[in-house]
Length: 103
Image (cartoon, rainbow, N blue to C red; front, side, top):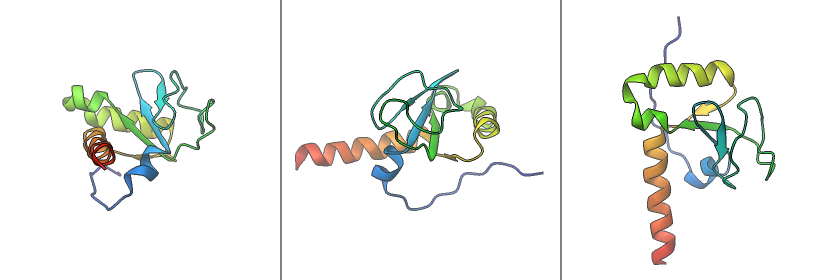
């Protein structure tokens, strides 16, 4: 039986952000254009047409005890997407925005 394990790997945050579906309880939003209310079955954003390759969930940050169930539920609905840790994503994207602001 397969289990979930966090694996760290190098990634370009802009690549992730430009193809990221941010999952809520029932629908998600596009990290690229901030379009709201996207059904998980959509493979691309209805507004900006970005293809989704990654998924994350805000609930993992607010409900860490449920993280396994959240990841499992999302992977059952969209096994093609790579799951990204929300805390890592927010921290790295915030750092990138700070650098561009100061440049």
